Image 1 (cartoon, rainbow, N blue to C red):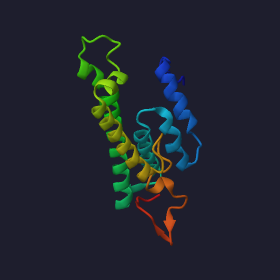
Image 2: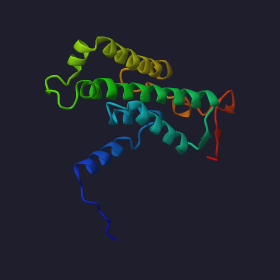
Image 3: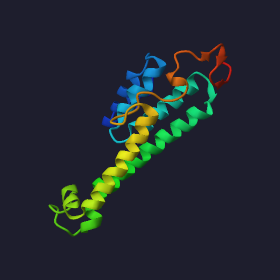
Length: 168
């Protein structure tokens, strides 16, 4: 039997390389590894991997606190990412117009001409990063931990399961 192979593209190669890098790794290492996929949304990649690891060990339902903390962490990521996009990337075009000279359409011009708006953007992004920091342990890149099963080295605490699981 010959194996069907798809043509290798740059994107296909990158995906295969990353998936190969998590094979054989410890369960709680995978979310930390995959968060490096993207510099803009590492929390989203981390949480997706944590959810996948939960499924691998048969977790059907996280404890309510863990579920809420994961959601809050993700909301912090969404906030800081959208603020970054709007204030740092889009606001120069929106404030000065698409017909303004390219030299004018940049973040430094926004800071110079609209300092209060620029400060508000920095403060809002900082708030989103602080939400991530308080729920995940750090704010600069991706989480150091994810509430729930993927952070537990043992599935049992005091002889009882820490989460509801299907038969494993």
